[in-house]
Length: 382
Image (cartoon, rainbow, N blue to C red; front, side):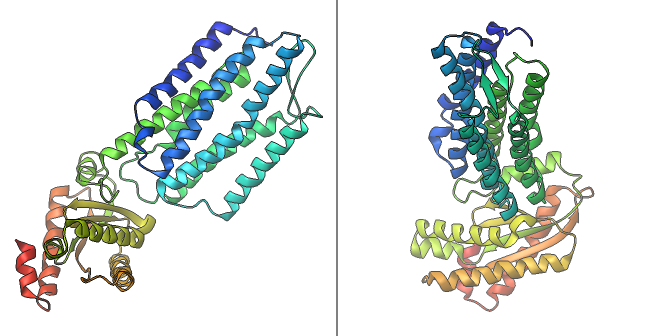
């Protein structure tokens, strides 16, 4: 067993705590922008506690007095128990962030593994299956130690698997799950190979910081009203992702939106925008991305090169919007003009793509107003 280097442990864990404190005082969690921030906050809190607890544990390590051994036992108990807080929260965070589900099988596995892990820790009070502290105050791993190590790997790899499985189109990888997991993995391997070196919890703190930075970068590309991507998202695609291959682009415009604003007020107009954005997002699902381009205009990036799939998506959008109109029973009816085309992004620039689909959308709008109130067309075009 290697000699424990207390100054090194203090410095690394202090680094982890300072990172966490920096994230908290930065005001990120105070903004309360989304449900996922709550999960990230509790992950962050557990990591901060674990950094402190680990430093205390190593401080009292090897002291035979009963009080010190009790502190050691409770400290290691927390470090094992925190695995079943942070791990499941990590998977939930990925699900919430990408608005996807992990599936019943994975959810059952997460629940059963967590329950088993906590149950074995309870049994460890009477029979040292996971760890024990001998009379000289020295920590020893039990035969179930590897279950907790494998559980940690399972939780984090499950989050990555959910992210990869459902992320069919990702023009800009805001949430790089692999890169975020690397500091934790390096810390785990280091501690396994060199006992007495503290790396895991500081690695977790680095990973949380990377997550927060990624989410902040993503917020730059988010529309504040609808939560959709904004125009800057398209500009970043144009600069960095022109080789993604063949994609379908749609330009969507709300018919008579100016009339809704003028007659019912801008607050009602904002609600109309939210209804449309939710409807389009639901219809596109995980097949693409939805962008609020400008005002009442939306752009959809659909991961297909099949015109039939594009037409099917448009039909879903219109059908879902009809259901919204029937449910809301407003004094106005929401309808859309949609222009689309399929492009090879290696052969065309984003400006040209937007020009093409804008013209196609305008043609659809002219068809719409050929059978509807011409005054609405004049007001809308103004």
